[in-house]
Length: 215
Image 1 (cartoon, rainbow, N blue to C red):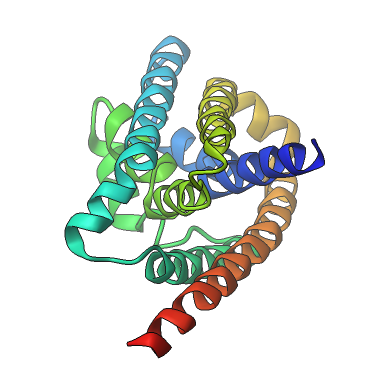
Image 2: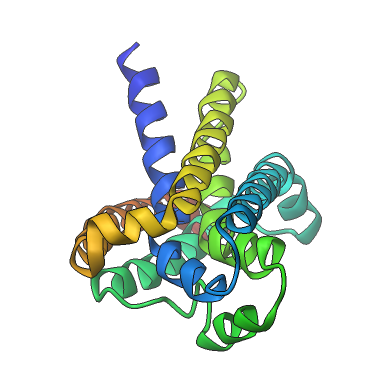
């Protein structure tokens, strides 16, 4: 029972901090400055649903993609861990990570009438870091523990729902937390994401080195 609870907490924390909807608040407000609150809510809903669908698709199809490309899960864990580590360093510095979204993409978003799909859902919410996270978590599913799929998919669903709530109330979140509050959350999330990233790398090295030696 303890193992189930632990895996559920690990899955949710990893997915939530990789998506990090709070980091999207300032950029969402900047890109929707001229939009009505109702339009913002609609875009937040569509973006959250799209991000959820993208992450679930990669979670369920990731293993097949790797098999087709002859990529081992160990290699992807190391690559995903390095990517998350880069993102976490930027979060600790409280600055937008280019691995998540670039200033050019934000500027382009300010010119668009509807940002729900691009760049809000992809890559701001369901970006490379979040995709790598769900794929690596699915890599922990073994024939003897198929139940692990359920916590991962639930973590994606809950994260998408929370992302919608955060973006729907983006103005209020920004007003209540302020720049300092958002920076504190970013640093805490960055620290936890760094720990998750290092664990991914260690897991990948642990799996990959024996395979490398056999070859």
